[in-house]
Image (tube, rainbow, N blue to C red):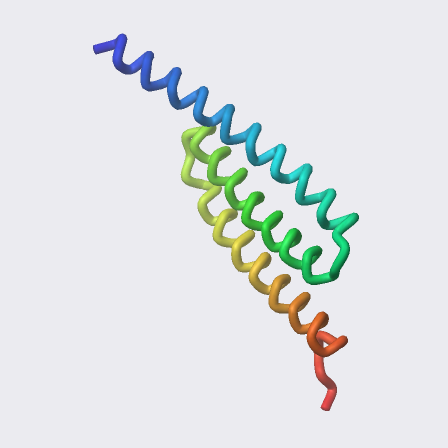
Length: 101
């Protein structure tokens, strides 16, 4: 029985390590796309995807630390990323975020 638990812990550790490495590589490429991107719409999509990756990092960290306290953080990052995406889309479409008229 303990061999099965040790094997499960080993698989979980390797999965988390691969997940963190993949998300880190993705964040590096997205930062490049945000800085160098040829169009503003490409930058907006990259910023939205960075928000999704931050949610994934918080979720993986919650699994790694064996806690459920970070689940609220995942939801908060999702809400803020959505609001940021709406603001960027409105700015790209109209040139202003808040209409005064």
